Amino acid sequence: MLERMTWTGSPEYRPSPVGGWGSEPVPYDHQQFPPQQKPLVKAPLRARIDPVGLETRGDRGSRRNRQQRRKQGWFGRVMRLYGWRVYMVPVLVVITSLLAVDGWRHHGAQKAEAASSTRQRDSHALGERGKGIGIPIGNTLSDRTKKSGALPEGISFTQAGQGTWSVLNGPSDRYGPAGSKKFFRYTVEVEDGIDLSPLMGTDAFSSGVDSTLRDPHSWIGGTDQIPGSEGDTYSFQRVSSADDIRSAESAADEDDKQHSGEGAVGFFRISLTSPETTRQECGYDIQLETSCYKPQDRRVVLNYARWVRGAVAFSGDRIEYRKYMVNHEVGHAIGHPNHQPCYIDGALAPIMMQQSFGVANNDIADLDPAGVVPPDGKVCKPNAWPYP
Image 1 (cartoon, rainbow, N blue to C red):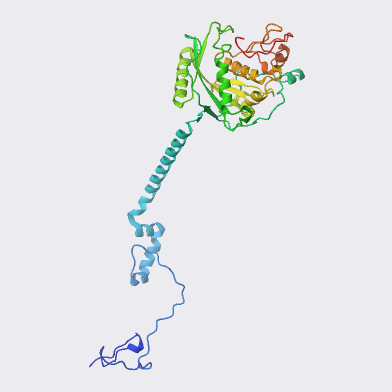
Image 2 (tube, rainbow, N blue to C red):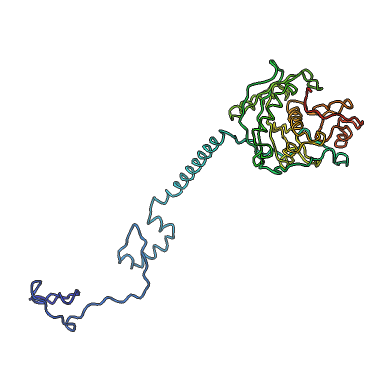
């Protein structure tokens, strides 16, 4: 005899208790066979996060297992779930960091190489603060010197640049007398951030520097008669590629070691520089716009304010004054650290006289009372050349 079957499915297709799966369905008696109901769950639903070892209901209900899990702590539970994979996390972090740094370096190298085709970023940024050669060292300004050393009125100019310089393209062959006693290579550079529209662009500045140094009245045009350099002759070559610059610096460094700074091979950077950066490079004890030579950086600092406006002594002739700027500051770079006075009243001023502040000895003496210029009343005429 068949035992009574309990069916919890659809009542319309409930099998007969006596007829099996092939019998006709009979009406469902709710009283005789009440449907089974699941208990109502009132607790909130919780998502289960257990990607590795799913436990049985018995395990979850075991008080002993729950106590063991609490004793393990967070690290034990993580180890139980993930095992040896936990130890791979710091290794992967280190590898990812190394790959990121290497990629950044490679990207930076590509950018630097691409930028060097026309204007090459100079690796020498703003140098250590300090006075350059050619800066007045007095403590006060007389009314007379304030007038003779003032910056003339004129067009506007960039007051502050970025403190870095870019090398302008334009290499040249060596020029000057054959067999010259001293040979210097140089770059032509412009501080980043300077607006060159008053100068008609970088080409105008670059060609102005080159044409000045190539002129037969410049340093290539004769035999030096300045005390300490008597008999010296000079030749120059402009360089602009990174390789040529490194080679020039290396040769100058080696020559300095052998000749105690008085070698026959040298290198310097002719750099057009904003007034604010010039003050940081050269000093600003005497508040007049000036230029200088910074020997520790081998940098000829040409003050942009002076390049645009000129000097009172040159009576508005800015082109002639720019030639003086180049020749005077390059004179410091090739071995003339000292200045000169006006020797003959009414004659052309020596190239190493501080003509930016005037051509009268009395004016210059006010800037440096203990210097080489005597307050003897002599007045010279402005002059831009070593060999006029």
